[in-house]
Length: 197
Image (cartoon, rainbow, N blue to C red; front, side):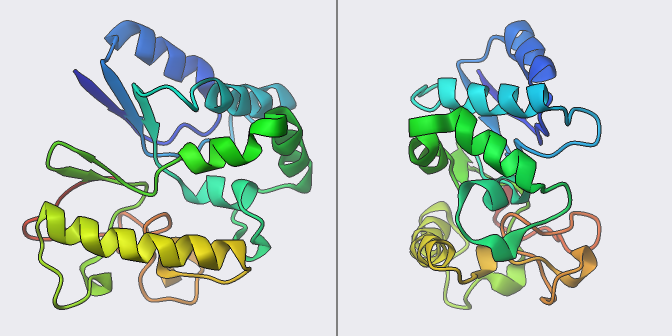
């Protein structure tokens, strides 16, 4: 029994209610742990960080990275989006304490749930290299290569297509990347690739 939850945005109480009610064998979330218009008090920020810390080694809980996570969990400050504050940045860092890197590293850029590709914002077909087979092994090979480049870029102040914002979200790229693609304007289905975003 697999449960896939959308963006969390610091509403940990609701997430816990869903988990308690559904009792999944595995829970997968699409990320966006931080920043909220409704639950943005210090206690909400801490609660989200504590939940991530408590579940960082839980094999039955998998979370993808969202655009509202990148600007808090990597040192690359060129990727800030709405909702970011320096105060929350410090609060999250202090709450995670010695687990900061471990929590960051347990988050996934994407995950397969059976033959469904799960990520925060999805893959746009224009970003897939022409010779990539639209199969689970083909997409996985491409994503693993791209992931290594993305993490290196994040850690060195650069950027990659994973974290780029599309023009519909105020970015300078035509299409947003894996964590920052607008679902209504940019996302399009890809034949042979079932996605949950």
